[in-house]
Image (cartoon, rainbow, N blue to C red):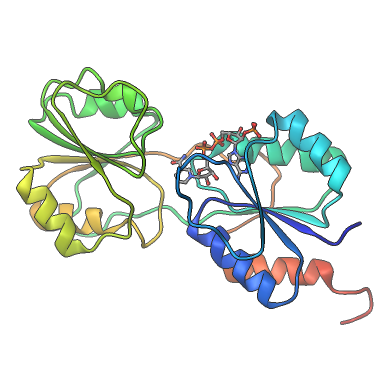
Length: 250
Ligand code: NAP
């Protein structure tokens, strides 16, 4: 055992977790997919790039023998989450999934949950001006939309965009005032998003409520069965510190 903890990152929670662990003297290796050109890096050691599927991650765990794997990837990062579950089970490596809660509608919200980007595209086909905030992956599901489409993503999508698309490259957090101004400027009449959860990108939901605009939310993929899951960085930290506590230390 090297005593190193592998944090599968790429989210704000993963960065906060890495900071909390480094602050407590834990040897942390954060892993990023390498999807975005200019990632916000966590503190501590970082590796970038895929492992090569579940088999690759299994081999990596066999070689590096981390003390634990903490999967703090995005709620929609289903492949790496599945790989982590398979690989950790192969080696008996303790695994924790840290996943923030999804969003819940409040009074005044008009939300429709759908199971996929494809169904989301069908749901908004009749609108004049769609605001797409589902990220650049899978954006081709919306390629046939007939109306105006405001597409916002961190990096440019490499899939085809709808004919009436306006691409806005930007990274949150966004304020409610900014979201209101943007939606008014583009006369947005429906918002499409993934149920990512969290505070950093929820301003668009508040703005949609204030403008009386409906929101279509894509449901999260299911988690692999049997994986222990927590929703906060604090719970994840407590789990790891408990795991690292020497036997008999109380
Ligand atoms: P994904 O579909 O689950 O991952 C695709 C592949 O990317 C994985 O099979 C894995 O490659 C590699 N990968 C993903 N996360 C990795 C990590 N932390 N370290 C090393 N390799 C990783 O996930 P994704 O949607 O591409 O997301 C990629 C990253 O972006 C994740 O870190 C995620 O937290 C972040 N992110 C995703 C979204 C989203 O909406 N999907 C939004 C914001 C941030 P191998 O199979 O080769 O190991």
